[in-house]
Length: 117
Image 1 (cartoon, one colour):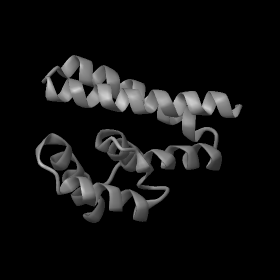
Image 2 (image 1 turned 180 degrees about the vertical axis):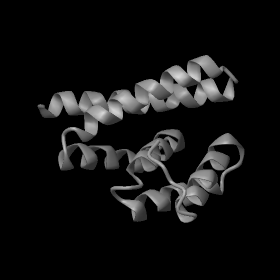
Image 3 (image 1 turned 30 degrees about the horizontal axis):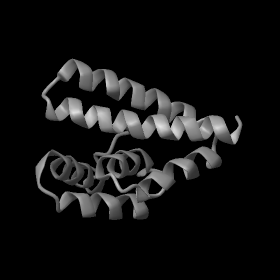
């Protein structure tokens, strides 16, 4: 896969993460589930690229959007737990759904209950 296509996948992952959060906040379960499936498919395509794909996804941990950084952290926990947990811990201090979701992810990771998203 060329760099341009991988960049497009990463960009689409970020957009889908934001759309997923918006659907959750709007309490639109069908839309949230649809976006979750898109995110999972994008993730699968990204990690098929091996280390290059995983490293590209890690770039999103530095996103100004907490929603994007959090989703990338959740999907990168197995590959880079220290960086991913640092992002999730920062987000867990926030109010609202994003903070709650980050704290649940941390709790599941630390208890050994973590399953791939």
